[in-house]
Amino acid sequence: MRPPFRFPEDLITLQRAWQQTYAALAQAPAGAGTTALRRRLIILSGGLCAHPYWAAPAGWRAGGVEPRRTARDHSSAPEREGAA
Image (tube, rainbow, N blue to C red; front, side):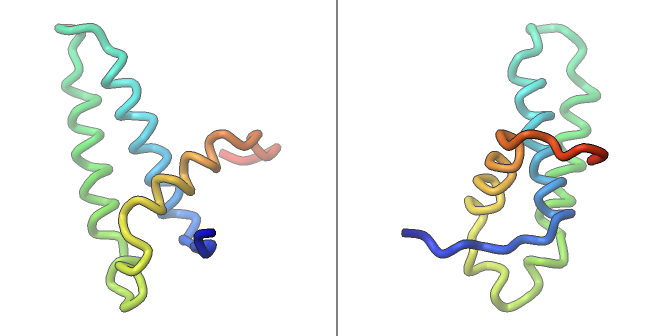
């Protein structure tokens, strides 16, 4: 069993936005003008890589996979009322 990781909520939100943008880009038909999605994905990728969480000594122990799993789990859970 994996130990639970506790990531900052803004990191999870950023990862969720990245995953949603990636999915939208993957579903877009060829030649559909995906420049805006690609630019957003680049900006989100930079934000993920430069997030202050990774500067902490324990940050890299969690690895890059766990935030994606946590964001996916957050996405599959029902939205909380009033959440943006």
